[in-house]
Length: 360
Image (cartoon, rainbow, N blue to C red; front, side):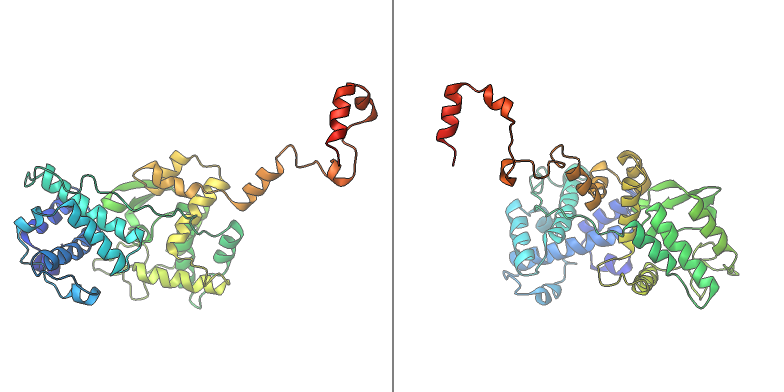
C-alpha cells in the first residue's frame, strides 16, 4: 500500500484498506481508489460534525486532514449523513451519477466491513443506501471497417516500433483485454495458443489467441530486444528504453494511430478498443453472451450485457423484416381500390348502407 495513504489514514480506515488488499486480494490501484473516495467522505463528515462548517468548494474540502478522525466519529455516521454528503458531492463538487455511485460503493463496503467483519457496529447505516439512477448509454466502438483502417494505419519509422504497436492493437481488438492487462503481460504468460491475463482484483483468466494474434506476436518477437536484467526483463511489451510499457504510453500510441486514420476527436480510447472487440465478437462472430463474459473477465453477466447493443444494420434489417414492408402503394390512400368488385357483391344491403354513410 502507498506510504502516503498509510500516513494520512485514521487507524480504522487503514484496517479496512489492509483487509481489501490482503484478504480480498484487491489491487493497489483499487485500494487507492477506495481510499480516495472515503477520504472525500470523511473530510466532509469531519467538517460538518467536528468543525461545524460546510465547505464552500472542493479546495476548502481538500485542506481538511483526516488522520485524526476517531473510531467514534466513523461509527457514528448515519444514513442521513451519507445522503447529505451525496447531495454535497453533486451540488458543490459537481459529481455526476457515475462518480456518486463510486462513492456509494466505497461507503457501502466500509460499513459492511465494520458490521460483519469487525462487529464495531450492530447496524449498518449504509445497508439501505440507494444508488443514483444512471442513463444507460450505448458504448462507443469502432466498426469492422474502422478497425481494419486503424490496423492499416500503424506505421512508424522504426520497424520494431511498428511491429510492437501493431501487436498491441491487434491483441486489444481481438481479445478485448484491458490496457492494464495488456501492459502486464509477461513472456511466460504465452503458452502455445493461449494467453494468461491478470485482471481486476488479481483474478487470472486464460484467453485463446487466434491466427492474427499469433502472427502479430511472432513478428514482434523478431524485433524485441531482451533487456540484460531488471524488473522488466520478462515484460512482453517494452518501450524504447527497454522498460515495461505504461498504460499512459499505450493511450498515446492508440491516439496517434486513430488520428492517422481520421478517427480522432470521436471519443475513442484504448478502452473503446475493448468495446470494439466485444461488439465485433457478438455481432459478427455470433459469440454467446456467456462465453463473452469469460473472455472479458467480467464478474457477472450483467456487466457483459452492455456490449450486446444492437447495431444500426440490425435495426434496419428488423424493420425490413416486417410483413408489411413490401406493401407499396396498395391502399386506398394511394388512390387504389382495396377490395374487388366480387367482394362488394357479397356485402349485405345493411352493411353497404352503413359503409356509404361514413364514406367521404
